[in-house]
Image (cartoon, one colour):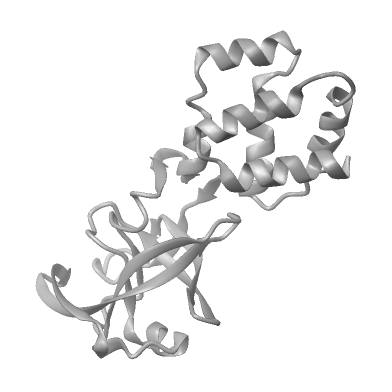
Length: 220
């Protein structure tokens, strides 16, 4: 999914009023509580960091977590943060991921998406010259690694590979799957579509996607 860079006030250079940054809206979960927050996508950060106030809204006893010191955040100074297990969901994606995030009371931190928790679950492609960046989930990447043998299986039954990618995208972006439900019904009569696709999804560990696929077949 592609996102636009967002203009934010530049606090580091008085000569500049705005700076374009890769900002994502995410929803954080802790138990039954959740909170939406805009975060900087920062490949230079080791972990995902959020302000203590976010943790308090979620109902987290922040200082009860494991303490970890981060350097190079507050104008070159180190800051203390506390680690907690939470869940996170990116805007436009249906899946939640489990992460260990840090919470700090430093005024220099609002929301940062770093290597651990974010970059190890998503591929991020920056295109600053175009003012945009793309985020792709690991599940989507696994689907792109379908073996040649399975590609030939699909072609044998007249099923285009783009159909599989489209189906995956419909779940990733929470879009209606009506188009793909209709496509499924076209192949149901006497065609082992479900067997072939289930084999693909099982090999790629697509439990949720397989479940949805079978539901579409039944509903169709």
